[in-house]
Amino acid sequence: MTMKPFSEISCYAIEHGEDGGSFRLGGMDVIASWSGGWDHVSVSRTDRCPTWDEMERVKRAFFRPEEVAMQLHVAEMDHINKHPYCLHLWRSHKWVIPMPPKWMVG
Image 1: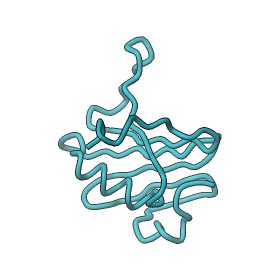
Image 2: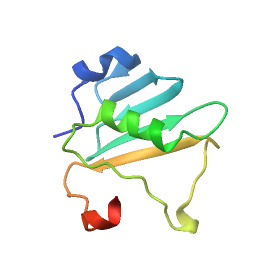
Image 3: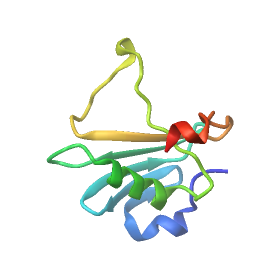
Image 4: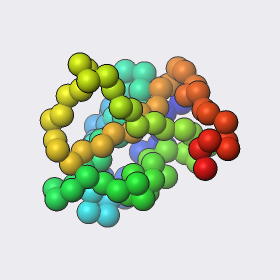
């Protein structure tokens, strides 16, 4: 199962295809895809990185309430920066994201 169906996020759509699309949500440019075994949401602004609250808003808009999505800080050698004000959310279609104990998250 992928992130929310397009019918639930179409109100934000600028353009879309079978595997994803571009969206506008509260001053943020969002590119979402749901193919290749992953849900991927790229979130950017023109003037600064999205805040935690903005990323949370995007997560709630594009993913179901019971889904866990993650941001990654990859190894330095794997880091690619194509946009200085862009952050990403991912969710695997195959693997459950491991979670730390709840007392460590809050």
